[in-house]
Image 1 (cartoon, helix red, strand yellow):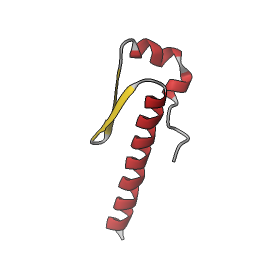
Image 2: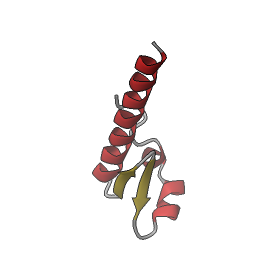
Image 3: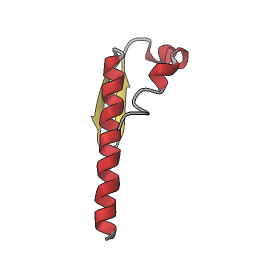
Length: 63
């Protein structure tokens, strides 16, 4: 039972990470999933991240 629950949780987390990376890519940010992290890169990304709420919220409502 625990193994099945763990697989379900891990699958949901992987789906969420992929959705976040896709949403960032739609907004012009280079993003990739590396293990349990979503890596985003781009020129001026930090300033854009703080200025653009849509960028910070990217992928949150996707499933």
